[in-house]
Length: 94
Image (cartoon, rainbow, N blue to C red; front, top):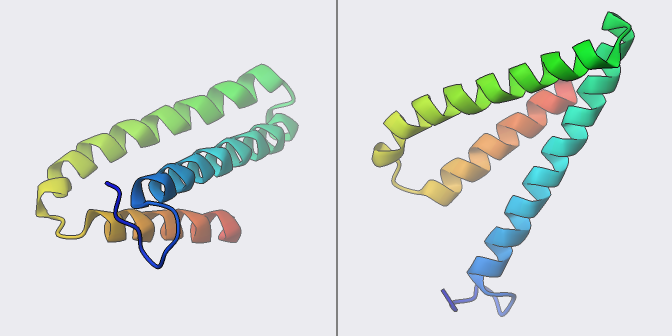
């Protein structure tokens, strides 16, 4: 995919950067939740377990729902951007 938009980096490089930033922000969010829940549970092991269970459950649910809805999406990049924006807003609200 060597096409570029606006003379910048190729689209593939931009997507890789976006996915990297998404992963980095989710890791930061996971660490923040682990620390917050550590204060609630009092034990880091229980907090880490709760965060990982929630994370894996979210991945599972997202895979099931996303797998069913993906064929109907006309603009997958736009849908991905909307999902990332919704996640960011929910993180800010929490």
